Length: 72
Image (cartoon, rainbow, N blue to C red):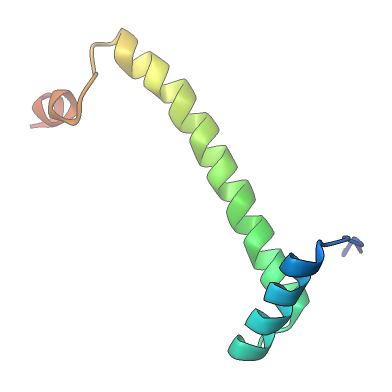
């Protein structure tokens, strides 16, 4: 099932999206969908990294070298 979303863009961003669409031959909807999917993925990754970083520090893993020593 699809959901339709109407988004108002500032003029500059709308212009950049139009240019990108023409340059790549992709439609604007696909570009926005891909961009949103990447944004959501990166947001989830940052939240997970933040949670795991706290646990890693508690366990004594502060640097990359600490991790490397533990798995070597």
